[in-house]
Image (cartoon, rainbow, N blue to C red):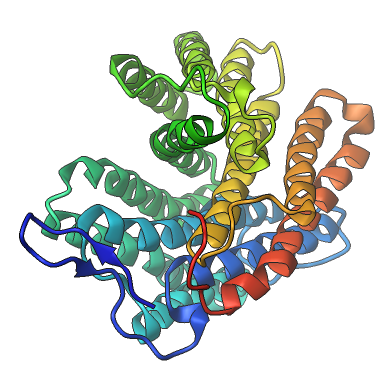
Length: 406
């Protein structure tokens, strides 16, 4: 499969892909990491539910709650981030992507991390931490090298957040071992991913919306990126930094609520109300809506108005779960030459993810119905991610088609 990145005037296009004859799964970074990441998200939840009920004992050195949190934040999310970056960076830098044996090596590092964490009670917490830390450190280093080589300086902030996520992962292992529970490192990881969503989502949501509206529904378009967006991102970063250190402090709560308002206004400027006919675009707006919702809820939790778990799961289950599925489905279709149309299976995946997030938020508010809502949320989460594996596995395993809408 070949493509082109236009070089300077008078120079030939730079090929996006070297000639590749191996398995299609290893032809581009999004293929293995989206597929195995989704399967891991489903399997980890299937293990967590009986572990939560005390019906399953895991061989991990983590407490059951910490294992669950870790495998979502530092297990699933790095797989999706890796798949996204390995696909996006060649477009940002004009350099060749990682394929074949090198891509397989990265996948094996990630898989080794998943095995090491779940077996950390047998192999020891320190060896598990060393093995598990490998992927994010490698990805951050490789991404920085490619971006610097391509002189694409504005994307270094994405690498900085990946490095923060890598540091949070190391801190998670250390904090869980010495303190018994990883509270600070959980907030670090969640904050890093929320900021990644505000940065990357802030590009792709209005961009894909603008492209679709210009073609299918002319009229009001998303506001272009400007000073307001910069203010929203900076306010969010400051509020999250305060929350990491002082989650129950009133100033942190006020900052979070203010950031939530800015994020809500930012989302409203993207004309999402005009995208109802295209589910692939609409889901991006729905997923991003959980970002301001999380800011509002976590901010109110600082004033002891609502449970902190509600806001954290608005981010974790809602923003992360829904936005990653939205990106994975769209990229899997577009980068394999398929038409950008949400099938019925894709719509079911989206619905399951959104209702799962709402159910998990609801479980924090209604203790009497908590167990039932928690299991409903877990079951729908499994349905969404296992559904992605079943519906998109054949797409990710097959060679790209010669033509298709991107």
